[in-house]
Every structure is written in structure tokens, then in C-alpha cells.
Image (cartoon, rainbow, N blue to C red; front, side):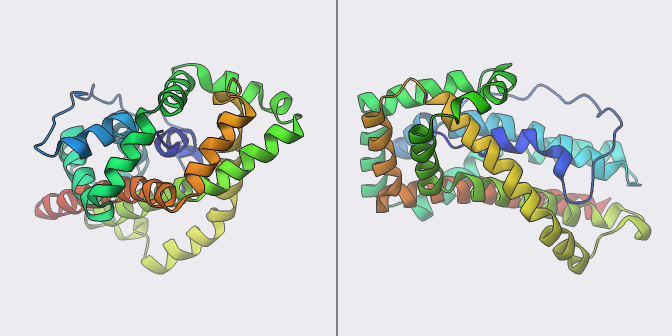
Length: 278
């Protein structure tokens, strides 16, 4: 099952730590969505079945959109910087970093057992429901039905158990904040002094923003879980909770979150090196 990290990230750009411009962002390029597989077939299969490959395709556009707000704060060489970011934050490069991170955080047995779960009838069913829930135009329907769906107290309680087991809200908050941190650090060398944000200032803004992000993303995750899994029986949802609560499920969801963060950090470091040369 894929996590909600990039879905949530794309919905909370307006809650970024340094504030967003109201100007319309520069149109972004169409990114290559091809999956380039390595010799490590189990990890590649895990990335596909978990939904990571689909998230990686979406991630660059979210990062680049967030970067546009920083660029409008007075950066020079804007066109060159955009070209660098588009080059480094591309799906193939991000997949490579994700693959390395997964191999470091999941052993062979973890991958095999997780693939067995993802390939099961229930795992396949849940993934299909998540894909349908992530379709364009679904967000309005998800949030529109939120109040109605959470009136079912029994189902809401199970959904909250699943939230706690997957830790999706916390991982989403961490990803949003990490993207902001690395972008500010990456672009600082090309920003006027008046627009630069020190590590101390960022830490202060993060402390202020984290509770708001936690609340906003928590509601988004809850609404998505209620909507996406409403056709699951209570027994099926409990089986998903049991997996997510297990040691394997905990390692799996943590590894997914760590791999996405690692890919963002790796791309930002390469971008920073190139931007400094400007």
C-alpha cells in the first residue's frame, strides 16, 4: 500500500513555513514517468507495488512548485536555477536514491514478506482502492464526504488506529518540513541577504508551523482513509491494521518515508553544488 506522503504534500503548499506567494507559479515541465528498473528485482517490485514509483513521479512537481515561491523572494539566475532543479529532481535520479535507501533500511526477508502481503488478495484490493482515491478530482469528493463518513464512530475508531499504526500524519509533516528546509538551504547562496533564512529562524518557524501542519495533515489522512477504505469490511480493515502495527509493518512504512526524504536530500545536495557554481 502506498503512503499518503506526496498526496498530502501537494495539498499543503499554502502552509509552507515561510509563506507562499499568491502569484501564479511558472508552468512546470511534463516529467518522464517511465520506470527504470535495476538488477535488484525485489526492491523494484516493492517500489511498484507499494506505490512509491507513482509518488516519485509526482514528487518533483511538488518540489518545483514550492521552489517557485523561494525564487520569487529575490533569487538571481532564476532560469539557470530552475534548469538545475529540474535536472536533479527528476524521477530517475530520485528512484535511484529511493532504491539505495530501501536497501539500507529493509533486509531481504523484510522485502520478501512485505511483497507477500502486498501481493495478497487484500493487499491488491487496498492498493486498487488507493489508486482510485488518488485520481484527479477525488480530493474534493474525499473532503466533501469527510463529515458524513466520520459519523460512523466504530469506523472512525478503526481509521484512527490505522493512522497511528502507519504514522502517516507524522511522516507527511516531516516530509513537508524537510522539503522546505532543503530548498531554503539549496537556494540561500543565490538569495539577497535580506531574504535569507538562518537555521535559527527556520527552527523557530518550524516550531510554529508544526502544530498547524499536524492538525491539517491529520485531517487529510483521516478523511482519505475513511474515503478510500469505506468498501472494506471491518475484518479486512482490521487485518490491514494488524499488518501496519506489526514489527514488519512499522519497518516498512518507516522505510518508505525515509526513502522519500533521502531522495529529496540527495537531489538538493547536488542542486546546491551546481547553484553555488553560478
